[in-house]
Structure formats: structure tokens, C-alpha cells
Length: 433
Image (tube, rainbow, N blue to C red; front, side):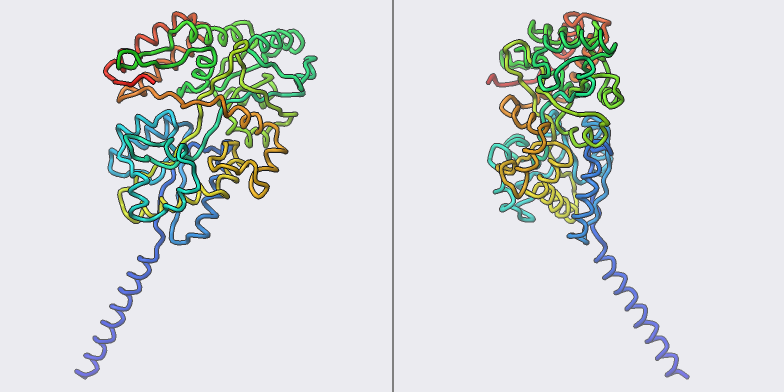
């Protein structure tokens, strides 16, 4: 009887240890889960993100990617900051170029140099020219991988243009041209001709001001100073506001403007080339595109939109998985599908000339070519510096809305905004270029 009990205990012990070992092995085989926070909605790159994640997970079954979408760069930035403060950082985040300095100063990012040192990837970096690698640089460190680059174009409804008696093969070029065409649109169709995408990132605001010789910031005596109240900036914004005041323009924020355009309630929509794929999919009319409006013979100056991929993981396993995912997104194949699925311009040289990748696509897609042709006009999107940078941007956004809505003149609104901005960034140092 004693022998049976001993054998029974031994069997139970063996089974228990076996079960524990099986559980340990199973847990070790569980995939590492990482979070990818982005601004890609169902109508703005979201489907392509889903495709990337599915394909990546098939090739990397030991990694699970959970995507979380936000409505804009400021939203994802604020959410990431809160999560980091709570000790639960997202692993990979799309950070808009506008917020590079703010993130560098306030967020504990994992540099590309550290990732390469720990997990490899030097060969992947050789795909990119040095200036692309330098785009996300902060205090000598590469904060992340440059991912998306765009510029603002004007999508237009060629069917409405024809109905108004305008030649869609010769769309307006300057703001003056758009105003003249706007009068025709109003008389013939009783519709506004254009709406500009607008949000609290002030992207199109900077494009309009800079294209007239103004801008958002300047460096004076070693300190940043607002440039939004410069005569050129004020004139540019008033020109935009006048389109609205005369009924030629429609003052709407980005999502509402997009909906109005697709519904045929406005003739044209100035927005990022990154919206191309979504608009082409949803438009029920002949969708075409024109260059961003110029001021007379002055060349347009367009802030480069888009984002970089930054890793904030604190756990080594998650850092490694996140770095694998980032590298996957930024391959030649990744950029090819990203451009096709959104409109963003690829950051690896030669893809738009290579038949294996994007040459045929660009040749057959004249809307994409508009943005490619505008690349020489692109400059770095201006970021308001320091810990008060977000508040400074909000001050400009509120002033723009006041002016574009006809509540104040551009001069009054921007002069007031300049005062607020200067008080917020007065301690921030700079070097004149």
C-alpha cells in the first residue's frame, strides 16, 4: 500500500511539473504585443494600416500589433503624453513633423542609434539618403524613422467646373484666379468654389502665409518671435478670408470640408496629397487636382506635412518588436503600398522612377504627380518651440478661425495672436539661419 502511495505521489508530481513546464513554454511562445498609435482613419490610410499589420503578423507570428487611431496629430500627442506620464507608453507613435521639437524636449523616446546598437538594422538605414535620416534628428540623436511626407494640393470637381462653364483642363493658378472663378461659380451654380482643410496644426495657414513671403516664426536677437503679424502674413490671410466673405470660399474645418466637397456642395478642396486615395475611392464625380494657389508670380512655399515613427517602449522585448515593425513599414515595398494607399510621397530615392515600384502608378495618376511636381516648393513645417508650443499653436488657430469666419480682420486677429504667441515663447532661444 505504501509503495502505491509513493508511486501515486510521484506520478502526480511528474504531471504537475510537466504541466508547469508546458505552461512556461506556452507563455514563452506567446506573441509580444505592441501598440501602434496613428492618425489613420477609415478614410485616411486606415485600410492600408490594417493591411500592413496583417501582413507583418503573418511574417512575424511572435509579434502582435494593436493599432489605435486618433483624429489628428495633437490628439495622438496629448494621449501619448498622458500614457507616458502614467507609466504605460505606447510602443510606436506617428508624430507629426510639427511636433518634433516638442516631443524631443518632453518625451523619453528611444533613439534609432540605441535601437540599432541593441537589435541591429544598420543595413536598413542604408536605403535612405542622409537628409531623410536627419529629418527626425533632435540634439544629435535620430528620434525616429521618417515615414510620411506630403504637401497641400487642390482637389476639384471637374463636373461642377464644366457646369459652371470653366475649363477643368485649365484650373485656377493664383488666388486672384480662384476669386474670379469663384464669382462665376457663385453666379452659375450658387455654390462656393473652394474650401481649405484647416485644423489646429495650422498647416494650410503656414502654406498661405509663407507663399506670400510671410510665415509663423522668425529669429530676432537670439529669441523666437512671431511672424504671423507681418504685413505679408496678414495680407495672405485676409486674401483667404475675403474668399469666404464674398461667398467664394467655405469656412469649414477639415472633416466638414471634406464631406462638403464629396457631397458636391463646394467645387474644390485644398488638402494634403495623403488624402488622395480616400478621395479617389469615395468621389462620385470626375476628381482632378491643381497646384496650391499662388500669390501672383510668387512661388508657393509649402510646409512638408506627414510624420515620423517614434518608439517609446521601455521593455526590451517590446522595443525589439517595435523596431521590427518600423523597419517593415519603411521598406521599398512598404513605401510603395503606403503611397498607393494614401498619397504620401515615398522617402526612398528612385521608387517613383522604378517600374517595379511606383513609376507606372505615378504616370497613370496625375493627381499624385501634382504633389510630386511641388516637392521643390516644400520646406520644414514650423513648430512653435518649448513647453508652451501647443498653446502658441492654439492661439494662432483661434485667431485664424476668427478671421476666416469674418469676426475680425486678419490684421486685428493676427496682431492679437502674435502678442499671445510672443508671451508664450519669449524665453525660447534660436539661431538665425
